[in-house]
Image (cartoon, rainbow, N blue to C red; front, side, top):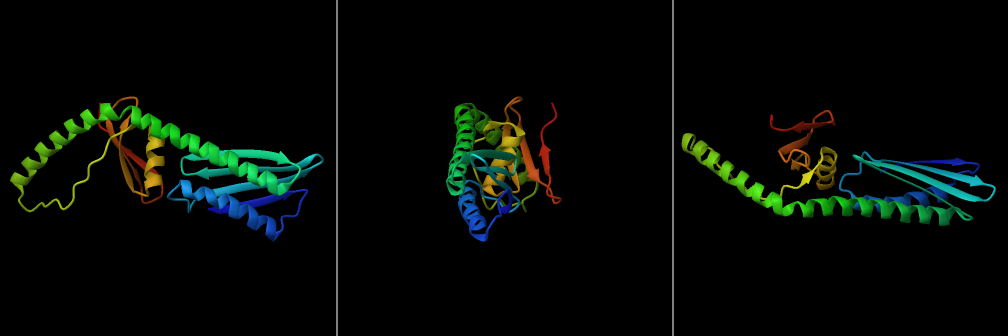
Length: 188
């Protein structure tokens, strides 16, 4: 995570910068890939206290919080608590959506596996050279494209298979070589 700390009416000392970076680096445990994440921290001294504003843009998810107390270090601690609550709330929401649709997707996945197995059997009959060395099974979860990209980033993969929440069709999001994202979905 890259930290951009700036002060308004205050000189940002090395000790203060280190404290901010140490505290906010705790947030990286919630995400697998945080190398390209920027954290913008604004420290401000006002007449009636010390204000801390933090904006962090995780891949496909942004958190923002601000807090004002009489002590700068206390403000930093309180902002960290707010940010952690926001992240936990978001992750809980994503997980809850996926669990609710799990039963529906199990039947859909079983049908897809049967279709794929039939297709693979046909291909294997035509070409004996193909050898599958590993089979992976997983539950398709209905979600929108942004949630799928977030899941892909959290897993640290280059692609992610999911079920579109609105159309119930199986789709794939992937990371392109230029760092942007692509979406593969069937024609209607």
